[in-house]
Length: 468
View (cartoon, rainbow, N blue to C red):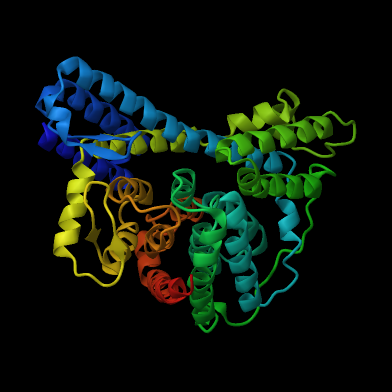
């Protein structure tokens, strides 16, 4: 039965990877895979001899001695535990996405366009790279990429030049998301899963992530594509609301407040995110009801805004397919963890990979080990395979204490490695859709820059971790 579960997972994983070729949204195989894996566990419950108790963090070797009802009760308890942990991540993401959409409702991101006051291509490159690096750490790399490419389309009219900027934005956004607990889904998973804390995450990863962004941007500065000046569209758009800047700073500040709230109260992050959403929503409703808040609309936008409160309108704009995808993939990985399959795979890694200094301690063994090469390979794999299930699998395979250097290295590798292919990250996929970037163009022009940045940042991490 275990073989059948692994086969279902592998087929679902393959369908997710080939999403663009199959033209089937990845949430579909993720949900089917999740349901079938747990259904197969229920059907074959009597045949399993071991079980991972998520509450006690122990592999139960005595599982095979239990009767059917005891096994069923434990399975339901484990399923509920994983659903709860997964829901923490999903509710957190829903809150963050809603705040971002509220900012956009008031056209808050138009404020960022005013930062660009030069026509020099290299200066514009650095402005967008740094903005992507900082903004992605606050509103996540996917949203930062959408915002900056939207602004880029208004500033840079030459599409050939714009593609180069988009490629460097992807690298910078993924690098920026890696050092913040709210910058990338995988980093959020590690943070909510109590594997990393905000202070140590920033301490370990800020410098390596900065180099991962800065080195490719520095190299690109000398490429022919960024020589000279470009024609910048200086046309100033009339803001939809006089509260644009206020809502931008309020929304970003509310998201940044979440880690602070967690440190003060020790409550789960989603509680702080719901508080932040509530505060932002209050101001949004007040400003929306102001007689002078909305000054200019196109007819369709006017109708859309007129019949919705800012919160209702923003909720309707949330990317729900992504939320359902995370639900499916995280619960599917949880099924493999519950059967101990991930721990068996970790044991294989321990035996086949050379020891290069990073020691891991598994929950069912007194001591084990795996090399830095494994974590680097995880980063390379995240360029081909979605990094969410990779990190979810890592959470199940390894049982290191909070803030162990392993978790920070995984956060860096999984967060930045996806930049090496256009389909390797959510930021890359959304940029591909917005600018119709060709897969092979990105592979020829941008991938090597991303690889150089990834390796330089990894080397910097290996050096700086000796200081902690």
